[in-house]
Image (cartoon, rainbow, N blue to C red; front, side, top):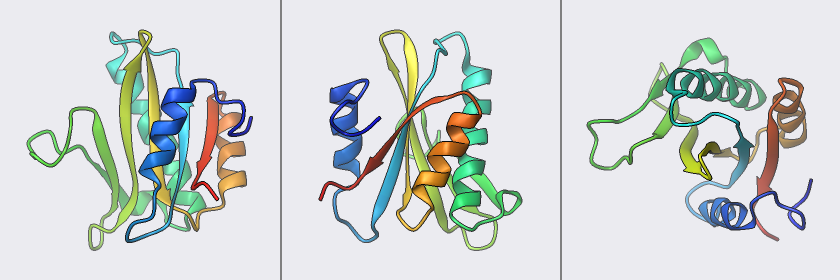
Length: 137
């Protein structure tokens, strides 16, 4: 799958826009799930599992990270989460869980120095439908 053939072109374009140049260069994933609004526990597990893959492929031990959901933080939206390091609260990944057409799509972004191809392959090996999102050339 490539940028010419996105599963959800609007979502892909929005994810791509999140990667626009900022303080750090970012890459991303769109994970298409079959999880609906009644599957919150599974959605959480999926988010953690993929976050651990991202950490591994970014050279961070997943055991040295935690998920910050920011439910009481006015700078965070509902269903927005960050993977941070235990030592120093350093950014590892961030995601948004979006309910589209009654199924959750999870958009992750993280520093672009992660091994993108290997990461996408690992997430696919776990049975997820995933699209790689990289900053447009």
